[in-house]
Length: 342
Image 1 (cartoon, rainbow, N blue to C red):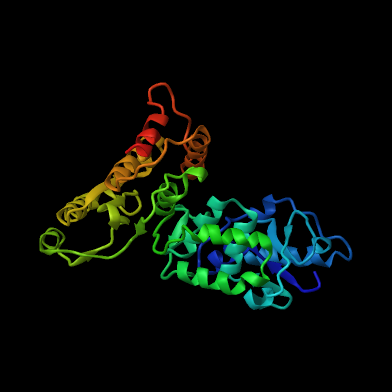
Image 2 (image 1 turned 120 degrees about the vertical axis):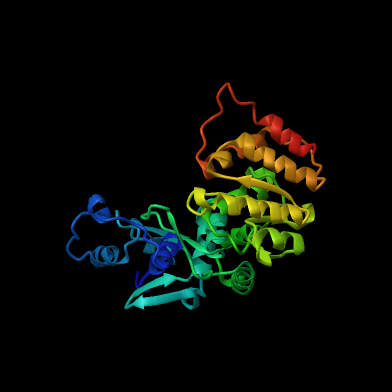
């Protein structure tokens, strides 16, 4: 790695999270990794040992290599080839011979090397107002401002596309669904499930906006006591708004205000829905919300294929860690077929 060690992909994103105070690993993480002592003349491994202790992000570190012959994999490092003539403009050198890919490039690398869903969740996170923090009780922290924007990422990709590896073209597909404003992982997951194409397991409902500010009319202002609000989900074309009630942001003593928010949205003439952790873990219930939204949109499509239904179950499981339905729950197919024919 004559050009120096460059942290990329998911590890670069972990670095930027940790640099903003989002704890990535807990005490003793490196001790549990069972790392071997550096061998004589193994300067790369010795340097990685130093870096791993300082970075406080999970190992193995994802490193960028310009060629296949330049890869140096170990328990501390997992290299991927990234032949990019313009990479130097998108790397921040934080100390001698050690650089970190900036957020746009790291997201493009995740889109090229990981699943499209993982890439979309990362894009929603860095375009939103939270950062994943696995070592904290909540699993994420709130950020003062976004580290990227959907429009900014699109402009960056257009400017850099001629120099990027062909696999980075997958970023363009991910950015079709990019959205600013997500305030939590739960909002990003619901948005992904609702928005992604049916071929990827989503409901294919486009136009959903996250935390858009709405100016309230006199009746809604009278209910809430203020002039504007930001529903978690808003679909202007359908006249639908929704809220996600997590225990962290909606403890029991805030329920009265939550009810007022829903009443204010209704006073604006909007059809409303409310989700929580329990409801999203049920494919049946989340599909039923999708059915309601699809009806409001007058969305008419062909019935989903068996492959699409299989993809939907897989996506739901990936996003919400669900179990398989037991005999007491109606089959999910009835709900997604209803969506198709709404």
